[in-house]
Image (tube, rainbow, N blue to C red; front, side, top):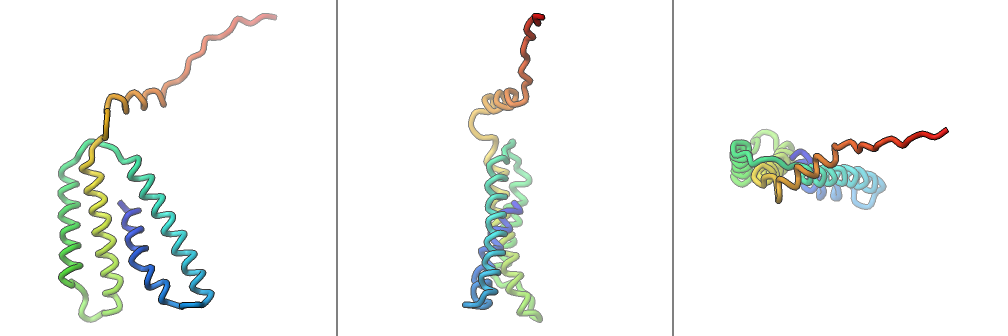
Length: 140
C-alpha cells in the first residue's frame, strides 16, 4: 500500500521535476534521484502485491473504499487551503497518492488467497520440511 502511495506521488511530481530546471545539470541529478525513488517504489509494490495473500477481509476493504471516496471527493471538489496556494500543489499530490494507495489496499483485501489453498499449504510445508537422511555405515 505504501509503495503504491510512493509510485503515485512520484508520478505526480514528475512534471514539476522536469519543469524545475530545464537543460541544466541539476535536472539530471533530480531525474536520477526521482528514478531511484520510483524504481524502489515499483519494486516495493511488486514484492508486496505478489506476497500479500490472505483471507478476504471485509472491514479493511470497506474502510479503504471509504478513504478512497473521501480522497476522490477532496480531489474533485477542490478541498484545498485558501491561504496557502503553494501548499495546494502538495495537498493535491497527497490526495492523488492516497487515493491510489487506498484502491490498492481495496484490491489486496478483496482478492483472497488465490487458487488452490490446499496446494499453497502443501508448498509451505515442503519449504519448511527438514530433509532427513539416514546415516551410512562407517568403515575404517
